[in-house]
Image (cartoon, rainbow, N blue to C red; front, side, top):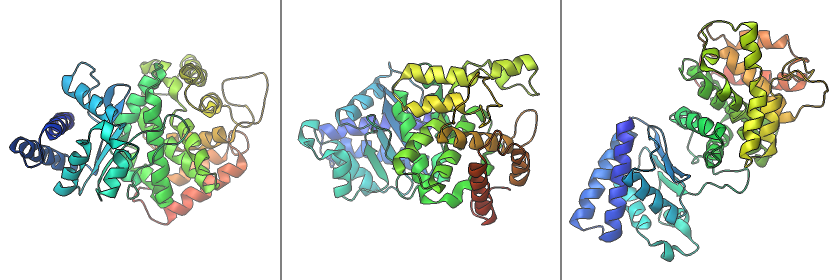
Length: 386
């Protein structure tokens, strides 16, 4: 797959360059188009969609290796940036006609685009299964997935992307904020489309890359809770970003502790208990995300009675997003296979969590979450094991 996505980047960059120089019926343009369409079709036979982002002067996507020195990647980034495009999405079912129209639109000189922009022109020309647009960095919202996206489509490639986001974000790379917002846009779009798809998360319990799958799961579960409470869409995005980045501080925890195939010793657990502090520091150092993200990173293990960690000398009312994240965090951790134990059923997870209802978990929010998950699992939708 990495070779295939890099081939797509190369063929896309070539087709765009050739189309900028020649008419669509020119032999060179036809050859480049044919190669691009074949490569794209090959990828979309295996995946429901392919995403390529241009973030911080680099291409980002599943299987793409970050390389600023790559001339092909650099040329594609420049072309996209000159047209105010941060993200390209190609979905299965895209036709040759749609791809040809996309290349025609991309061949328009930036000076001639005026105020309409690429997305509006694509829409006006009836191009479907291809989306191009800009990720909003100014606020707390991002464009969601296309209307027909679902959680299964969103998860394909999502873990690879969020792993890069978290690593770069923890290193202070502000450019990754835009991609984090785009991911949350996908979460919100998928959850709003169909809450009944939520049990699908159970099918992901065998994923090897626990840290990043867990981040994605907690983001989804937190947004689902917020939606069930009828929070406005703006709040869904803020809560989603906070849930997605809640464990950012674990990037500073030694891997031999994070991946230990046994229960932690007291000393090791003391190190692990530092991750909320590390996470809050990392978010504060980046400084381009909502304050809520810092709050949740710090508060998500405290518990409403402050019996959790880090240990503090005073108490306050925890933020709603922190209380939602605590519940999602515990539930997903219990459901997931770990090196030292197997994941457990939904009912077993709630039996364990119920013992801390009113101490670690907000009782009303816990009851709401239990009703939500059990009603969805009982409906038999999503296909995940119970």
